[in-house]
Image (cartoon, rainbow, N blue to C red; front, side):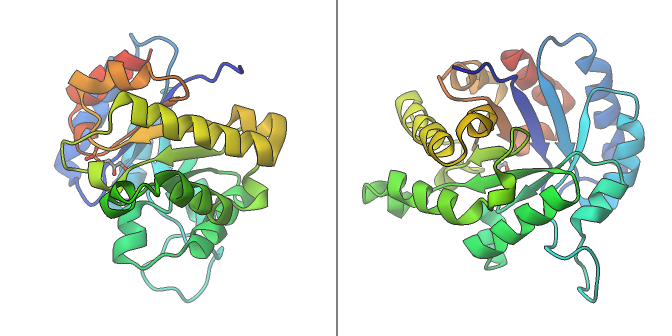
Length: 249
Ligand code: 13P
């Protein structure tokens, strides 16, 4: 099986004022001692230019939390993939369950955003995940398969694309799936990427997200098919984010 270097990405969501910049400085300082792991921080848009400056010259990448499908235009409040690229970002999250839920984003919208990311030279981090009702109904694998088929555009069939498996019921709840459940979904995602994209698909990293914390990261990151983590709450504190990165290195 192809060896994929692990990636730990912090999704700050709608958190962080300028007073949070020292956390980024602490992450940059702490990351120097880490081994073989890629790191990214996705701050809120307002902080992104400042975070980008702190990250400059460090191995930690900047990422956006969302992008519009168009390069520019009359879309008040939106940020395009080209704007993220212009800021020096390398990643952009698309299709997070909070965007799907609160902004009514469909798989087709997510696919258009992922295609925009590719167009701008960014790596999309395309999120998928089942609700608790879907898991309880035994529909997890079919839900994920459908989301993958419809949310990943053909353009994203390349090695630098990232998929994040985030069970909706595990986000911000302190609950995580069992390691066997994580492995089952990650293996299924890996097979789907292989079947659709071949060699490029086998290089696509599949992150786990949902209540990843310093005390469960090592176990989760050791699950076969888990290529890193998309971290919400625990990414806001440098010590916690670095501890999770350390568990991956
Ligand atoms: P938490 O780590 O806070 O559960 O959030 C996960 C997430 O949604 C990352 O995108």
